[in-house]
Image 1: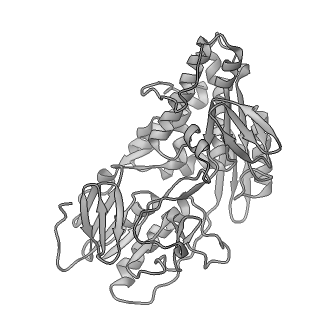
Image 2: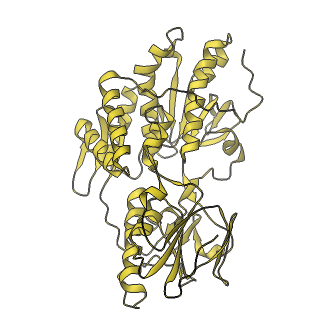
Image 3: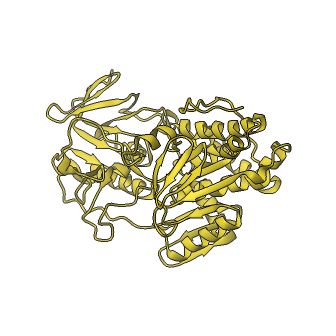
Length: 433
């Protein structure tokens, strides 16, 4: 991998440039460590806004930033664009598609991937939204369906093309359902005047008895109310059993006919082969102690979505797989390495500080749960916009996102409804007249 060896510095290899890995890479002291960051992409993605890319609200370069630009002019720092295939803990080596690399310390920050819970049909036929390419696929898919709906003479096929099923009532599902509902109300009637947009149906399916399981009951009820006002059909206590590309099979012998199923029902850790036994895993996440060190290896740490710390009684199943825990864990690890690790000083346990959770349903509609109070409506929506704007990396990204949001707010228009890269369905059996 063409990484020079520095005799007086320990080498820290970080796998993954998400919220957690990037924090460590930026803050490790270069006079104490040689830092090597490995990722399959050369950019960092602000995942909370992926749904806006999928619904033509933002272009992908608004929520992505070059890793080399974020961490530039740093001595003893190296970035390598690579896929990690295997880790050999005995030799302390990482094996990638571009070569192998020795490590003194390894930090796993590989994040998460879509969890289909073992259902291969759903994995094959549904649309995920965990990365920029997947969000772009979804955008093309949505726009192509309306173009196809214009062409078909078959009313049943048109209905399936214009029916959207979102599985998963967490923040991602709620925000995506709200964005689609606003497209139906404000955008699509102008783009497709010769198509009866009233035939468009949006279904949000949630397996539990309420939306937004990680938020308060009042916020969940408010989100439900807002979605119904926007015309979204919300199904609670509704478990999806299967999907064959045309029909969503639900428990209690119910079904929905649709060519468009968006899977937002869960995530799991993005695992790497080679060093974990089954007793180290919890829901496909790596068990760690209160210093975020893996249970079997003193020089391997896990942070972010891939890590599961069950020693905190408030989070017996691990911390939420969201940005805030990942950022805090990344900062904790960097501070740990900089001030305690090499000097072998006692390490304070990681303590997660819950800063609050939020979800937006549409313009002037959002819910926010903070430790001591809750908000809804316009103020919650404004805070949601401010927090996400500040979270974007780089002045350019913030300026572009803010400009787009201002234009959309006053003109009710999403300006990037372009099919740049056509998406081909996996279901080749679909026939459209």
